[in-house]
Length: 207
Image 1 (cartoon, one colour):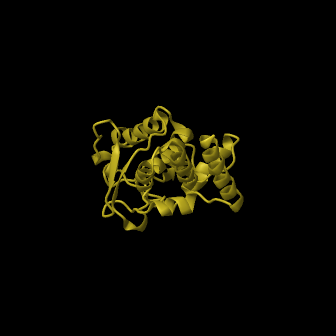
Image 2 (cartoon, rainbow, N blue to C red):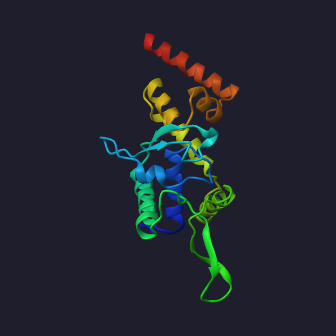
Image 3 (cartoon, rainbow, N blue to C red):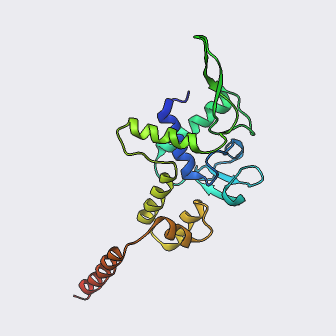
């Protein structure tokens, strides 16, 4: 297994995948990571061709790993290297494969390793993620929660509307309106607080 190993490694890898990609939860494959180059500043990028990868809405687009921390990229890279170098997975094999079932040495039918196939749907991966959070004493979260966190983080760190537009494109949204309306709801009370804060800030500058 990768150096970070086990369930934590799997969860971090899924998180990293959510950071970089926009695909159906059960169907990412290795090709984009085996073929994708690094750009001049060392940021791995993935060209998601809908003819090769089952992206949501069958859209083809370019993504880059978002700058959220080296742990995610390291763990994800180790996971891909493990599949490619240790298990000799190829371009058509699953990125997060379901387990291979067979007869164990102890007898009976159980998990004996990893298959090369995708899960039929995202239910089991969501269960694995939720179980990992529960075992860590944290509230249950689903993989999509990573995307919600990324949007909120992007709102905090993007210095200009243009940079947030780039952040939004990286999440697979053609319009920044989709990102804001789906992931940044604002209550009437919060709307009032924000407008009042801007008014007070403007007044303080005058003084």
